[in-house]
Length: 359
Length: 104
Ligand code: FES
Figure 1 (spheres, each protein chain N blue to C red):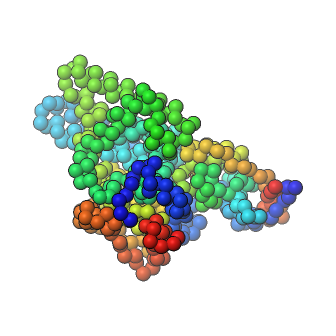
Figure 2 (cartoon, rainbow over the protein chains, first blue to last red):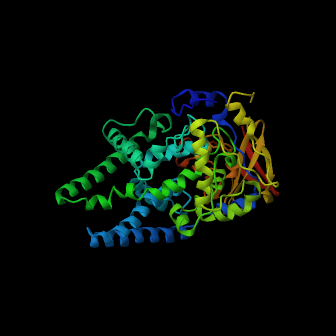
Figure 3 (cartoon, rainbow over the protein chains, first blue to last red):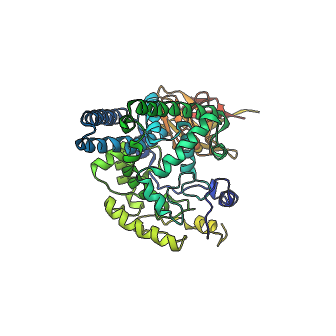
């Protein structure tokens, strides 16, 4: 395929539309309607419990961090607070953006807005970018959420563990949105009726961050920034660690999530922070299934999926060498075996997208 | 000239559920509400042409299986992003164990 053009207005974007890849039907494992209906059912209870735990934990850790500040003993509490602020907010943003976390709509919306602020994403823009990520998962030029482009930019990836590239991208874009308006690239996936919301959200975020900086200057201390803003950086590592595993080293330009997404078994703490998004193939295949039902969905369809990685470490051991090989050869991808019970991969679309065969 | 068309048996759809119905080269979604009324809309989501019958009925709402956009299936009105454009609706009724929909 050669050099990839990830620009949403670029050559690969045009080709994906022309070849029909952008509008192709995706592979789904067959699940009886009755089973699927049961898996899709919504409930407030698990998300209320998890949200009380999350925000309760944040308040306790931040209070202890502030009480012990600036002693070195405050550090563990900041680290814990940071992971909840800078990583758990990513999964809350994600699930509440889908509207599946709670049964009650306004609860999804409130947690979504708070999480978007903490993870530094414009709540209005990113709702649409994520819709595109689901339509065109890892289709080059169409998916605005490709975390690992090819060849992989290792320095940027490592910087992401402390949020550097994201914050550097977010701050100017927030100011642009607040002062000038919607960016031309955003206009490719955000409908015009939503543009005023993009601006409004950016202004609210800007006001809160500006007030925090002003308070820090007035107090002559970074303490206010330890509570708001900086935890997006010092607590980002967990969501980057888990997020890179979602699609890293796997195929792009395919229409079968078993080829481009990864399910990883994880410890309970990581699953709480990540809200079960370790079942990533399952989530992409059936985005209607709420996070708390994903383990059941996994059991229902595992016969049709490649075996999950057994741990975060095992998944990195698989992914990292593949990323390194992609430095030399952009077209290299991990190809995982399907169990004998599975239906075969849909490789035909992939081949067509590479321009080496007719669709 | 609109005509009433036999879409399915009432037993084919549980209360608070939906079924796909294809007719005359078009696809429709036929809904059975929790209180046992029948409704019919276009079968494809107005956002990205996905079959709504694979989605979830919750009360008066159908949630699309692709991006979780929502419609009020009684009126076709969009209720949650990313859907912005309403669905067309068609009269539906049950008669002698069959569901009939009035199609153009
Ligand atoms: S296709 Fe229905 S919400 Fe996107």
